[in-house]
Amino acid sequence: MEADEFRVNGYSEIEREKLNLINSTYKNLERLENYKNETIHFEKQRAKSSHKRVFNKPYKEL
Image (cartoon, rainbow, N blue to C red; front, side, top):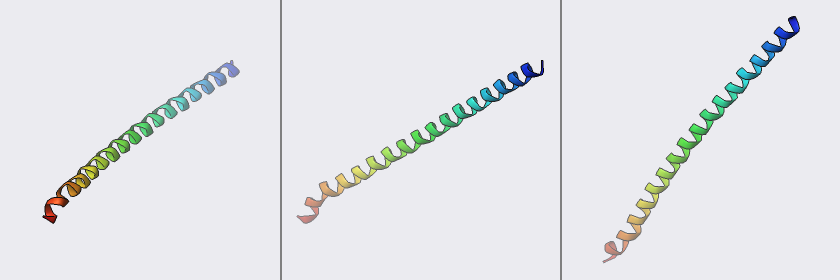
């Protein structure tokens, strides 16, 4: 009886740890996705700014 209880408690602990790992991994992936999107947004803004500078430069030289 005691061995069965010990085994069940062990399995429960393993399942809890597994769920914690899954949740932690999900949160990390979500955070990485947000960083990726912020980086893409920043790079797009930088490209637009660079494009404007290059495009407007000939007009300033006239």
